[in-house]
Image (cartoon, rainbow, N blue to C red; front, side, top):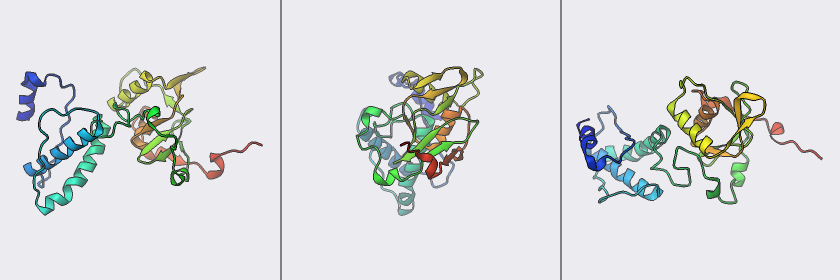
Length: 225
């Protein structure tokens, strides 16, 4: 906390808008482990293309075997938590810089591999919302036509939900439904980091990922001759 207070008083760091702190009460934490993770973070940020690191990159510390065995799995876990909190700097720039929406122009022509194409279409089973999606690589793709609940005015929703909704509004992928006031419709496919995030953004509330259920194969595709 003293270090954070010192940074806050430093006028050279006045450009900072958000701060993310990775901490733990585990007795396994050490200064060397922190230096190792700092070096990993720096390498991920440099590879992501989202930001430019100023100054010499930190050097990874030599870790004892017990720390080395947990260091990289910790970073993998922290990456997902940081992404969910709104820090995109550790992830490749194929994803939208602001919390998990993929740029359609960035994808190649072959969106689905044969293996991915076998994965079942999923439907959302919450509050009567119409929603369709499928898993692709490490993302969950919500398809055009899926419905999104309009957020209330009381601001009780998670801040991350409101932030992601603002991104959808800014990018013009939310369309009003004539005669319906409590829902909007996606006019573009949108990729999220996980089914859970997709569910929360569409529902506008904290709902579990199991509201997405596989659609039976004969309901996934109708053939009209």
